[in-house]
Length: 257
Image (cartoon, rainbow, N blue to C red; front, top):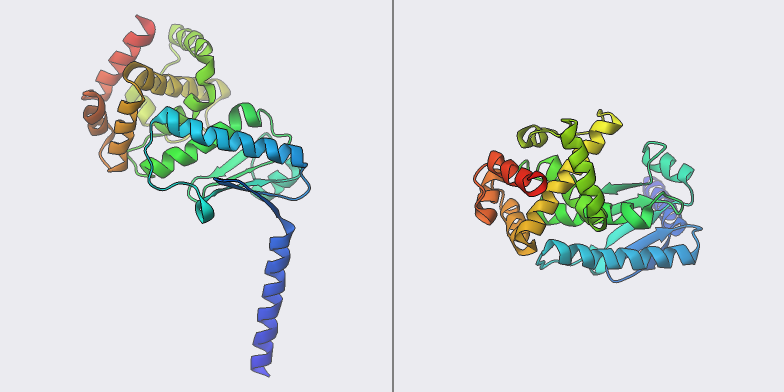
């Protein structure tokens, strides 16, 4: 009788698991598995194409040489919920959220009407995953570096806005010292203006490192981070920049002199 009960429980769990798996349909591409329910095929094909294009663009622009690619069972997963309501209910994100990301498991959650999904959000979240997968999650990677890289890929085509915004922030003394910036590990408690300044300054630092020295040196810098070296040792290894003060001085000269 006990054995029969166990078999019944196994059958119940199998049926439940099967139903849950059937609840999501799949669209597969070379590097992604897109899970959806009732989303239109036009949207799904557009999402697939943008994701594949961004994947290649990020690797190329950051200069990463990888041995492990997102293929077969290592593909990233994108869950497309039918609506904002379904997305928020499932993820517990804020009502204004358009997408969320699980860096460790290479998962992005979103919905078809998410604001600026194709223009900004998708490439931003994908950059987070690719960057962190490469350099790791050690304490040698400050938040400004993580967000700066993602924002660089998102806004690199609008550098003219960056320079204008950065100069305005400098005039109003709204920029942080690099040591202060490196000490920031979350911006969720910041005002909108302070958070905006953080992202602009972070973006400008990555733009400076890539545009001034080239993507090969940035890849060398990221490789050193991957080895677990301190931030300053990585800067010295790749750029000959010995301290954060030295980096800040060179960054200021690049943008404000």
